[in-house]
Length: 121
Image (cartoon, rainbow, N blue to C red):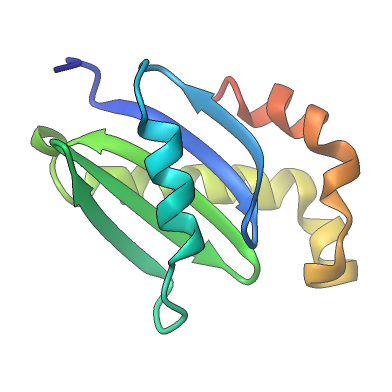
């Protein structure tokens, strides 16, 4: 098992991943995308457990923030990380999101998002 506490992260708009970072080889991305497709709509925080990892989701309007962590990392630390990513995301892109809401065409700047958030540490 990987000793890194956080092994994969992404920012998505609804069901489409806009930016991601993977610190681990394996099927983590595939499982995360499958979980993203099945997110329930009744809460803004979710955690799924699979193969010794937790898949932690934070939903804000139509944006989804995910981090995959090793189970031994605990339950609250991944959400602290996600809140920080969300704050940085909103600070950088908040005016665009506020003006256009979920209709914002972030797909056109997904390569910029990958540069900004794909190497988040």
